[in-house]
Structures are given as structure tokens and as C-alpha cells.
Length: 110
Image 1: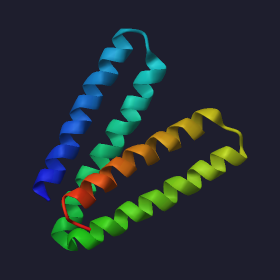
Image 2 (image 1 turned 90 degrees about the vertical axis):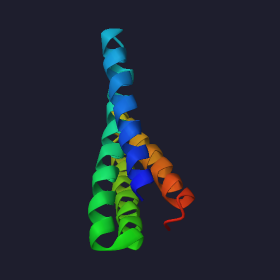
Image 3 (image 1 turned 135 degrees about the vertical axis):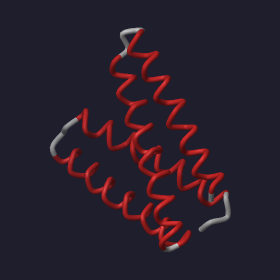
Image 4 (image 1 turned 60 degrees about the vertical axis):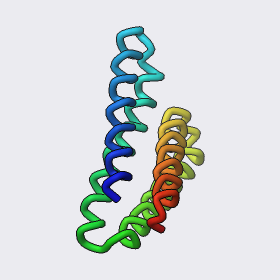
């Protein structure tokens, strides 16, 4: 699990740097989405560390499922409200979460 946490932290750092570069190029909208993805990786790395100490891989897997459900509900709500910005943000969060889940599965931790 330490390898997974390191991967998530590395992704967060890379995305944070990319967001800064995009802002420097006056590409603020793209930077926002990099920042959103970076935040998901950061949250998941933190949660992974905590849950691995308290409940092991099953607890972390349950938390990933909770995030998926909550962010999926937020996406559906944004769609009902026709909030294009919120839709894009929630889709970005779910996409990053899918990557985290795939990494979790690949690490054999499901």
C-alpha cells in the first residue's frame, strides 16, 4: 500500500505543477481541472494512509465506493440544475477516482 500512496502523491505533485504552468500560460480553465484532479489524488492518498492503519484495504475500498456514490450524486444534481461548470468538475473528480480505484485494484488490494 505504501507504493500506492507514493503513486498518488506523485500524481498530485505532477498535476499541481501542471496547473501552475497552465496558469502561467493564462489557461486558467485547464488549470482548474488539473487542480481538481490533484485534490482527488491528495484526498485519496491521505485517506488510504489513515484507513490502512485502521481497517486495512477493505476500509479504503469502502471509502472509494463512498466517494464514488457521493460524487456521482453531486454530478446528477448538477445535471438537474444544468450547471455546466459543476458537471465538468464532478466528472473530473469521478475520472480521477476511477484511476485511483484502478491503481488500488492493480496493487492487489481490493
